[in-house]
Image (cartoon, rainbow, N blue to C red):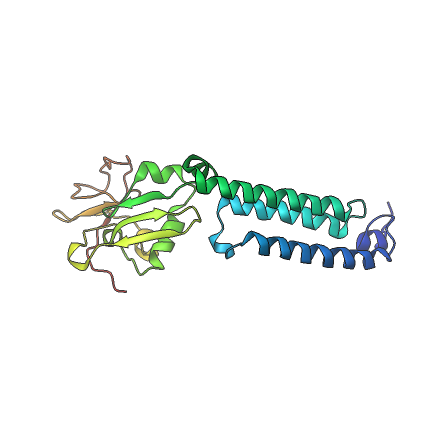
Amino acid sequence: MQFDLQRLLIGEDIPYSFLAEVLARTSIMFFVLLFILRLSGKRGIKQLSIFELAILISLGSAAGDPMFYREVGLIPAILVFIVVITLYKIITYLTGRFEKVEKFVEGKPVKLIHQGKIIYRTFRKETLAYDELFSQLRQNNITHLGQVECAYLETSGDLSIFYFSDQDVVPGLPILPDIYDFPAEDITPGVSYACTHCGETKAVLSSSDVCAICGEREWLQARHEIRVA
């Protein structure tokens, strides 16, 4: 097959005059999409729930194809918009009336940290990685888990954090990268250590001791300093 610059640039059997139609299609679908999103009352992208993200993906697909495919007309795409936004309004109404529908569509917040320790079984069910969890905690000036009374993973993916008061801070797992990445090899008697997987703290006898909560064998010396905001 010979190299065809026109096919590379615009596609096979498509005249350059179609570019003017692409311009018109894109302009129309852009303003239709903007109008639909304005009607739906969308929030900031970081606050989108899974349900709202599904709506945006559906609208994006419906908007994109008629922008540059000749065989896709504008009217079917606009009909898709009408159906999707109608479903959005109906489901939003139902979630406000029925708790079961709300839980199915939006999900519910999940408690990940309690009393300075990771709720290990719950955490393992989520798609959140340790790096992501610790990163969000560090962004709130947290240096070890003992500063956290509890933390919830919201349906938006954000982390809601509640702190111990200074006098109630407990020994906890340090989450600073330069410390967390190097588990203890030598154990000091009488010192509290924290499991690097669940944050369970105790006085261990050796670095190979098994954590009673998660069954792992990696420990870090627990920290006890207060949080500095």
